[in-house]
Amino acid sequence: MKKVIIGCMLLATVGVMAQRGEGHDRAGMKDLSAEQIGELQSKKATLALDLNEAQQAQMKALFIEEAKMRKTKMEERKAAKESGESKKLTADERYEIANERLDHQIAQKEAVKNILNEEQFEKWKKMQHRKGKHSKGKHKGNKNKEGKKKPRK
Image (cartoon, rainbow, N blue to C red; front, side, top):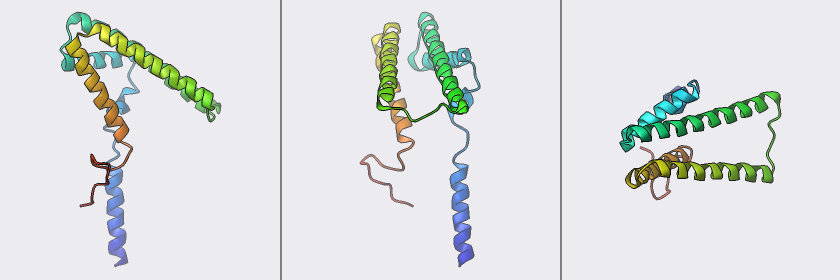
């Protein structure tokens, strides 16, 4: 009986570990340059939003600028972590970082609004909302729409 229980536990563990593969979009993106990331994102936006040539060029420039900023921030965090400078942030530092991030998001939204027409912008907002909703839900566990745990099968 013990062997059966241990075997079941081992199979369950292997099953869970197998689901943590590196098939995520962002896993391969960290090796790409900012220009490559911008190019890919602009092509995805073109497919989703039916952008014209001028809009494609403007969105590509925006995406490249965003990717460069993200890469710079990532390198700064990596350097601070390696040098041992990474410490717990104070409340004021967290506030400053959050404020800066939100200001950047507002500016980004305004820039996109200036590039896209109303219909495209509404579709872009829905895409952004779904993207944020998806990433937030990834870590919250296995819950259904009412916030209750799903029953096990």
